[in-house]
Length: 469
View 1 (cartoon, rainbow, N blue to C red):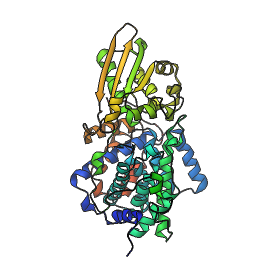
View 2: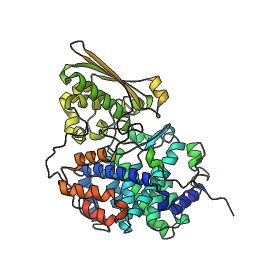
View 3: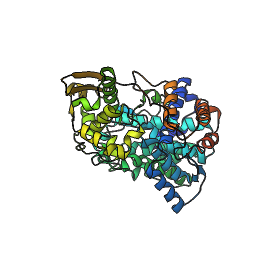
View 4: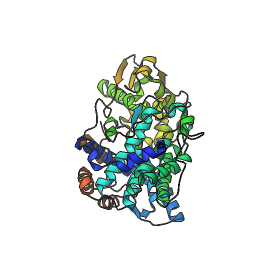
């Protein structure tokens, strides 16, 4: 008997995963991340791109078997695109860090939700498929420095989302392997996606990957085959990555969820400690934005390259939401002015405002060799604020609330959910969603989607929450 390929081994891993592999502790953390993903998705509903997506859905296919967050319905693949893009849009989703980059495990969420809705799955089955997807994506990210090699993490997302979707659609192990191969071979995504000028596609690349993944799983269920030597074959992923994929796919544990980290500011993960330090200095010392003469931010090399003006391009003139949440200069400036960094701070009008544009030009971001040596095990920064009257305030800061050393609790996640969703769902509906997610393994996905369909796609209720402080 020939040796199974890597795609086949991953397919077997996904197929053989059982609910018993999800420990009670892992279930608890998964429910936290699920509620977090839903809060992110709801907060994104009024975004201009989502109106355009709904118009395209109507033009191409109209209604389908999957409900949409905020009402309406469409096909499973288009629902995967929509759901995934919602979760990513406000840049508050979870992350998994590795020496060669990172991934956002909840990029899988929207695709797995669409597949579960289409398959009339139970909450238990949905959680298991999501756990499988998280595990696959993070295990690959831990081994292969994808971003450092010039590739975007949508590559491993294609693998994980196809595997999780295939499990929900009832594929056998060999069919899941073919779904993985079909979804991934044409989904070679490049790190230049994150370079300046950062485009809208940064946030929608995971969605199109999920769209292909669930469609590929459906094709594999009908007998379509893909290149099973996706990794080992001539010019496959092993050659592209210039290294083997040494992952133990016989290990059935589903515990990587405990290594995921969360955000409380609308910013790339590298900006979380920066913003925590900046706001602490501002509040503790009563610093007013018009008193600031200069701000210096020292950060690890990856943070400087991606968001500080390093190899991914200059950060001196952000104009769009996508440029703003990948710009440490802007994020520091708007934090000092507004005393928060939430969805409102990513509105293009806020980004382009004269006060933010003027202050960001007083911010300098520099790489620090000592901090770089500790990344990604520690996300360090030093923020120094110099005031016009001669006062100087500086803080060296390690980590942030939501990181591995100080993880979000369920209660803190509930607070974040209320903050993000209060304009789109009244208190009663928010409470119903929270309660259902807390016992999701006892309910059906149809019950969850019925609640999510009641969420308003436009703001209807007053915004009272001060944000996560």
